Length: 250
Image 1 (cartoon, helix red, strand yellow):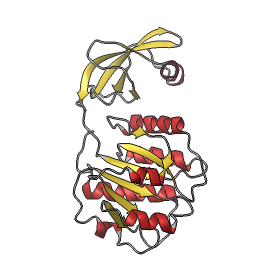
Image 2: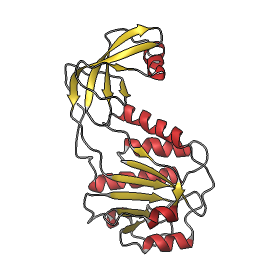
Image 3: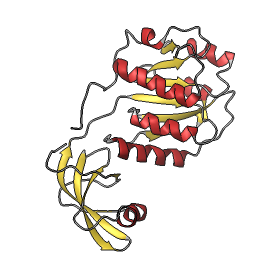
Image 4: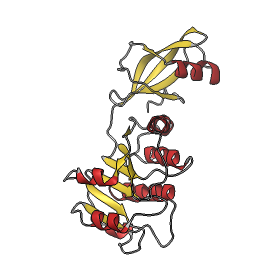
């Protein structure tokens, strides 16, 4: 980022961003900036929308609960995240939200909840989208991952793109360790598939392994919870073919 202008707070906005074109803060954003953070007029924050890069913007107070955000300096050009999807079965409690948060921090392009034979939890897609947006703001990434509606795993696999590799996290112990399996991996469209708390059914394992795009991997000698497995798998994939060699903040 520009050394002379480094805002510490960031917000995602839907509106186009360009110098001198004010953006109206949503009521929730205005409340957060004015009443929670108690920012005053002229304070600088960072804005991004996933299209126009990152901008430093000045807060323009219009009332106790209303403010505009005026872009004044372009800080970073837009850059794409790795073309990686995360397929995961929803889990109970707040651990599904943890998966969305950590997957966003690790750079996924899309979050795809899938319903498997042993899935025993529901998913609030709107809440997941909010988690992803907040994680993108806090992690200084320039876009927010797409959050899709939950679909049956069979339906997702039936429409699987021919050019997208699928890192299948196999809990049976029959697949090679992930670092070995990914040794010859190359960048491109990828996805990671994590199972539910009860694991995949035998039919699901057989179907996934039969796919030509599948890369079955093991995640070590211990049984991992679904949220831990998602974080571990994405970390391994990022280290192998992701963007961890790119430093964007100083």
